[in-house]
Image (cartoon, rainbow, N blue to C red; front, side, top):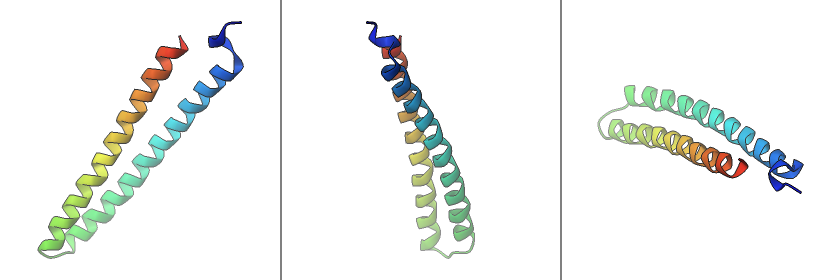
Length: 83
């Protein structure tokens, strides 16, 4: 029995890829909403609040970058073992 062609392995890989794609889309949507919110707050804030909003915006963007990197790493691993 070839384990690479079993329904359990191929189904799990397909499920994992679909979940990762959905989570990436959701993370990009949430980051966009947060970025708009932080930019509006920054435009209406004074002094120290402006710096804080800039830091929060950078953290939100970095989280999206890390989520995308994790997606790529998981896809590389699943493609490597699924061959």
